[in-house]
Length: 283
Image 1 (cartoon, rainbow, N blue to C red):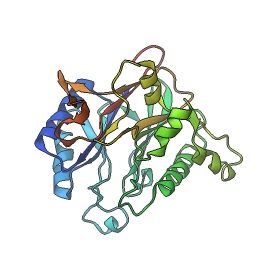
Image 2 (cartoon, one colour):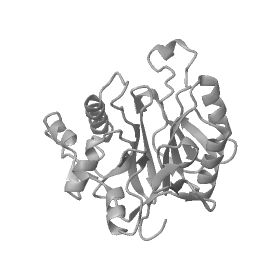
Image 3 (cartoon, helix red, strand yellow):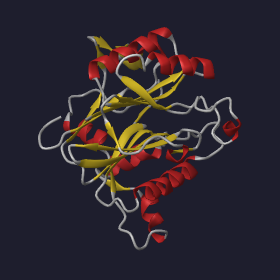
């Protein structure tokens, strides 16, 4: 099982779309999620149609019910996620609006792989600049949503994958290799009769620590700093998971080194990431 996530930045261009097509073709994910990109309903519809021509179908896009009265509650949001699933993946949850939060910035799906159940949450977290809902409220809402969706599913393996947009996490990761999310700890009062599933952080940091010769430090870049914005949180019952930060597609570097500065081609500000789940030694 391969799961792919990429925040491709706003104002989608043809060259960025080509990069994305290459990444999807080469990595061949079972499920993939795209953050940002199209900035209008028409462009988003075109984008969804482009990636559902072959073997994928759209599980969620923010264009759903965009012109209906229901849009007052589930309206168009250019920052909403776009989630695609390969034909043949055994989903155990059909999409409904109960499986999304914050106008499509949190998307939930449940699937089965080799008899194992997974609860998967894609996210696009709130930033410090310009979002009405602040980061702390977003993470609290995310934690409540996870608790709601996974209650009475004690055997599920939980994945939270996406752009967390929370800068302090990097400092926490530097201090301790694994951390508990305090937000999940605090929710214990609401679910005192249920064991809290520990969600650990962070496979990306483990990867970087294990490859000391890697120049790559994080998944978000600009000229001033680099940071670990994009990563998965995994419950400790997930075995044999591999995590990739993709820096090259079709022999071309996404990350370009120029004058000792790390830059991303064509205005990308995030690198794509792939989570590979291996069970019993098989992909």
